Image (cartoon, rainbow, N blue to C red; front, top):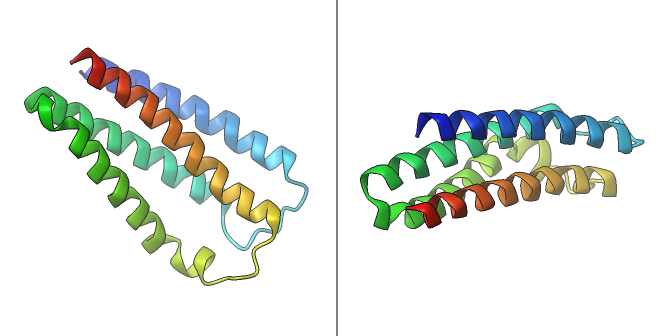
Length: 124
């Protein structure tokens, strides 16, 4: 269990490094109204927490692990809205690169979580 969490952490760190620097390199506009680094850090840390929660629940109660995953995803989105409310959602005039830079890490880390959690749940 700890080995799988550490491997997932390594994968998340690599994904963070590659996607953050790729996003920073591809986006011409560098004056975002929010910190791109903090958005990527939030998704990285939240993905690790979500996976760890599902891993522990799957170890103790394998039948409830899917529900734990769904609940943790909703909590993750709620915390994202709470944390970035003043910097992101209060500004209705986001440019297209800013919108893409907000949505890209969300889907990237969400897809990564879903793939790894589905492999975990299929193995149990």
